[in-house]
Length: 330
Ligand SMILES: C/C(=C\COP(=O)(O)O)CCC[C@H](C)CCC[C@H](C)CCCC(C)C
Ligand SMILES: Nc1ccn([C@@H]2O[C@H](COP(=O)(O)OP(=O)(O)O)[C@@H](O)[C@H]2O)c(=O)n1
Image 1 (spheres, rainbow, N blue to C red):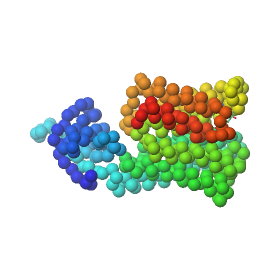
Image 2: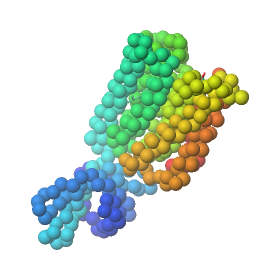
Image 3: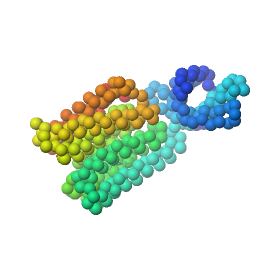
């Protein structure tokens, strides 16, 4: 698409005050406008600026900037001017690079912060690990809207867990020594632990960002089960897990209930966050039930005595991904 190309519309149908469906001469591409902001030029003329999303054959939406000037004196009563900024333009590249740098710094600071708390014995190492487990993936997903609408944005986002993957491998193989990292994300302070749970965790972050990104509920539901569900299952289960699961004496009913509850709650909160930002629309009457079913399956999978064979950070997100894909098929 040419940069900076502008054209006037041939047909404009107003469907709702904030949503205009617009049939253009772009081989019947449907364009959706969402209000960005309004500027007033003078008393009888206003300019309404919109972020326009082209939704053509389910491709990643292209970002368009356009303005509608309305007037009470001139004819016709309004004119639509579209300035098309190709979302893969330079501005998107710089935005994504900046966002990836910012999130990388955030990841480093998060681990350093909990290392400091552990160092000063303000928090137990096992709790530090779980809080980092809950916060890392959750904050990573919450950062996704700061990336651009370009098709490459998801790869810039995935660069952050990839960087941490490298960090975990180098330290896990003792090719580098980051005591803070080892202390804040391992159980017993053995660097080799980094090559299991934490490594699988960041690999799942990469897979969800690249395969599903923010246009689909599937990846974020899978990560919500891993971060929120599995994270709180450990914290609650260790503290209140006196009644064990009949088929797995290492885990408890309290832990499994927390797995279900927080996996469900984290998923609903994330789906609301991304749908409220306009990345997808959901039929909430069915979505709540579907998420509950995914959470139930994830809870059953997490409760199984399979940790010695395959880590929860693989089985929980993958089983959730499969179920969510069947229910949401995005
Ligand atoms: C402790 C972690 C996993 C262990 O899980 P489990 O074995 O206890 O079940 C999480 C490891 C996190 C990793 C070192 C850092 C990941 C950062 C993330 C990619 C980006 C976060 C960005 C945000 C803005 C803080
Ligand atoms: N469903 C669960 C999950 C964990 N837990 C408790 O949390 C501890 C760690 O759980 P886990 O082996 O899943 O730990 P990670 O592999 O997630 O680090 C278990 O040894 C239990 O004490 C529980 O009671 N019930």
